[in-house]
Image (tube, rainbow, N blue to C red; front, side, top):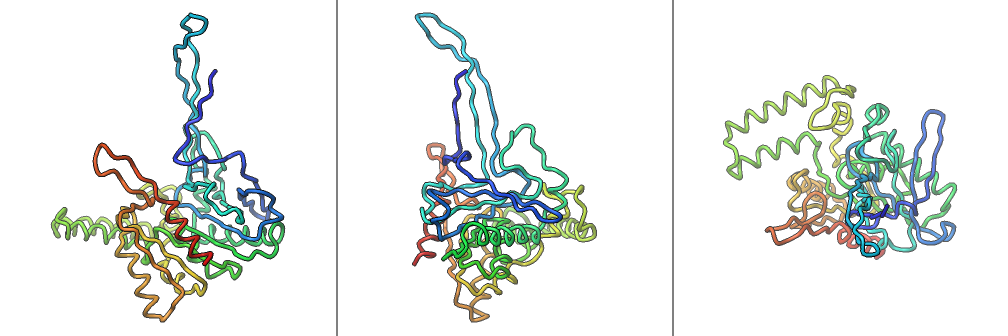
Length: 335
């Protein structure tokens, strides 16, 4: 058997993570630390909150193929094993500054690593899929890190991407130990509004007539109304997520962002297909209106929701730019 590892865009370094548990009276939080060197010598903490869904931080698919090889002049069949890896952590860990520990948190009931084919989210994931739960996890992880591992950190930096941006918006004002907040690929309004905005943008772009859009809007409002009538239902789904998830993530992020008084870096994708840029533009406007000066607001014109540039023709490949945003952010953090 010949093992062949096929990873994603960056080496995951799965085996190099340290796995920690926080056990409370009613729950267990699993978080994971990657670092270069000894944790006792570190003074800076970086925590990343990934986006929506019940997938593990890392998943693998194992495939086997029969290949022909020549040995001693003979053609023999050999089994070749390929391991394909999928990740919710789009980081090149080699580019994380050495003085930081890098921390990720597993969602409730979700393993760190599992087989992609056999995995299904558990009931406990759906029952705890909420903004407040993820914020609670984050607070406990920060408290555990500063109590047991890095007692007097000089920086605690939190980054949230997509759904994770909602998490850091709330955690950023609630937890006084956080020093810097990265709010990436998130809007300013409630997530419901983004769907209405996309429909209306299709009218402006000539993809729909207003009459057609009105039907789509009526259908959207019907769905939202049904969700809000059943806000704790984990069985009914809309667009791949449970009613409970949608109802639990309706807080307009701008309400939480405005409560943050520490440095805040908002990164917006100009070609975001999941969060309309018009929703994000509310953020600098409201900060100006409230006379707050702790905001850096940066639009990356060519990036999509994942901070990638799609190919323009069949001869081009995807260009993954997430780490370029990260490096812009870290230069700002360290200035």
